[in-house]
Image (cartoon, rainbow, N blue to C red; front, side, top):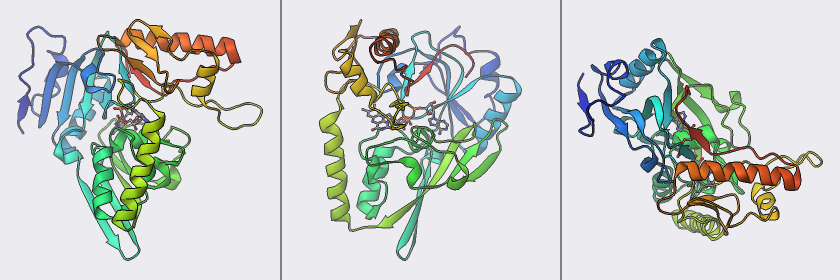
Length: 326
Ligand SMILES: Cc1cc2nc3c(=O)[nH]c(=O)nc-3n(C[C@H](O)[C@H](O)[C@H](O)COP(=O)(O)OP(=O)(O)OC[C@H]3O[C@@H](n4cnc5c(N)ncnc54)[C@H](O)[C@@H]3O)c2cc1C
């Protein structure tokens, strides 16, 4: 097998040595000191010691197994739409499934029903367009949610009109030893913004879809997308909602974290280049030149101020990565 080493390798970087040796005979693309922050929707943040893009499932399996054996932390990067990479950067291996082997899409039609099998690296926006063109409905409630299939499954991404788990039928997960297992949706404990996926790397997922008139489907998709865009600062650098909607202890229902932040008077609050969006208070956005440190500091202030104001401790939805074991 060949190793395609990215030309961005810099002499003397921390990635050289033991971790790079893990990869020398594998079919992977390697980028030492990769600018990871630029691969997130915040468009800021630290570097990865080593960003690795396996070109096949076999290469991913061997890589995962070796990293586990050598105790090297592995983190999986999806579309970076729910991720803040702290300015200190990330150690170990960051794995991207952005190779064709992990972006396959297959459709199986059987009379009134149909299903799709999508690679975890497949882009969710692209999938929406492909389903619209093919006249396959059942996932349009995910319209306008950025990221990959893997990220959507792990985060159980969704919103007012439904979540990823509701159409999911199976998910294929690679464990730390590089072994693959298929899990039925019924065996997963999915909940709000939690896919209930066993620890490991999601490599593929299958979804139930329904043949639907393409024009009707496109109209529904556009309505849902427009609805979302009218309520969220879509063009700003952000990772969507920073916090999960907490459960009200009295009613047992979820309350809007954005509403709690708004009621604490925090819309427009700033920390360096980061600010609480005036459009949607649960979006922490960033001016050009703002840093991941600004975002992290702002999120801490928001947690403290909401706790003071309403007695609720907000829990982060956005994943933060830094220099410590995953
Ligand atoms: C403008 C904007 C709007 C948004 N709106 C919504 C919304 O309406 N609803 C919603 O739920 N979210 C929303 N989000 C957040 C984000 O789109 C979702 O959480 C999305 O599912 C993240 O997918 P990703 O591929 O980008 O994951 P990443 O951000 O790359 O990763 C998120 C986490 O998932 C893990 N992960 C990713 N892929 C895999 C994999 N294959 N195997 C194992 N672990 C994996 C990562 O390790 C990380 O822990 C929004 C974000 C933005 C920027």
